[in-house]
Image (tube, rainbow, N blue to C red; front, side, top):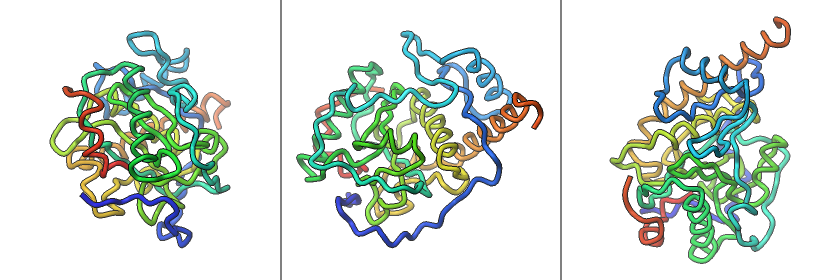
Length: 280
């Protein structure tokens, strides 16, 4: 495994080119979190968007997962994050790429909120204690149950403002990218439906917030560094992810103009220490 993230790496010479959406994007609609409903067709996405327009989308336990405007992102205070060694640098520009990672941890069966919060705390502890970083490296984390959490400090506020909290999730490219950690190891295992659907909606949200073209902006960690991350299976699905996000955005744009009058096993902790060199 190759270490690929670096605190304080000199990334000020941006090598990735800025990407701009080709079409005006309206507010993000649609949840896509019904585990029994497959992704991939405009009709399905449109139906989910219509359902969401009536109110927030909830999981089986009643927990709100997505609203019409953005995913439900649990804050650092909610998962009880440690204080960072220093505040993250926030730059007043958008990222130009969204980096998809896997955590290279066990493919746990536990889909609970408690498990997701424990995952975020474990990642932060490894990044700070083992890697010696100021905080968790990634800006966002998604559990196998589809729960979305803030990672590095100041990330959520920065996203909502259209800015970027500089992370430590992809070596030499932290200054112009934003990273999403996806719980699990996807070298050969399938990606859980709940995680996949949350990943899609998070990418919709980020592309809308930052005016990004998903066909060019969504990439895997291995596209930048010498690493197996985000796993062969998840990496092979990135073209599908780009298409699904683009479809959702295009459908959202049309709905917005119309409405405005025409215009699976293992524990979380035991594999964490030896396998986090694939973590962003």
